[in-house]
Length: 325
Image (cartoon, rainbow, N blue to C red; front, side, top):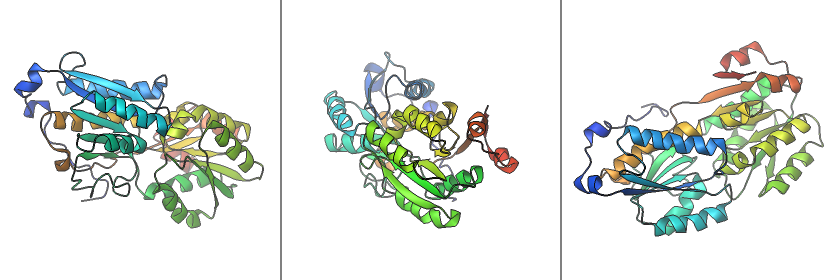
């Protein structure tokens, strides 16, 4: 089986009739998410979750009650909110982002946890293996090591003059697999890698501004809740310093960023509803293999490219799944 081949889920709601207890009682779902409640990206994920659960026979206020918490890129808030969610005694927990999983598993070592937007569940110790997760945790990953090379190759094609690239990440929230993967891919594109850690908005501004003092630079933004929450600041800094940047999620490009390659958070949250459904119907997380990404999207913003003075090769433009003009 190919690495990214999607392991087909078993049949949907029709094949799993609700148990008597589920029909007679409202089931509780606790959700921990890394974004801001006011962010359209966060709301899109929430609506996608509700939509997919509805298609599977679960409706908010009728047979399920969803308790949603957004921790806005701050892992300290994630831990406090995890305690709140566990006190509600949910039937299943949905953890969006690595810090969400870490916080919930500390607070609820036996409750079923479905994760999504997690880069390295094996390395983080969440599961024993992708095929046989074991324990009470399983879910959907968002990253494969070869993506690091793809990010750098696409950025270099868009801006061949760059010689340096700053990797923007929060050490407290970014999965550790990301940096080794990027370091391994750097020699092939002949770029100097400059790690640029930041724990808050002030450090983020300082890191990018300091990096921009030297010429021929570009940015690589790691896929994580922290840059997603601060994406407008990152976009403003990239524009102000005229830095070509590769972003991890489509929302960066639709909001004005140059380019992105990766998965849609909204779609991943929607996919996670299938496993939430399975657990509510009695399947153990240990029996649900971890699902890897089954679709990657490449977005280009031509308006931003023009503003940066980039003459994008037609071959690069032709690779884009979506063009923003």
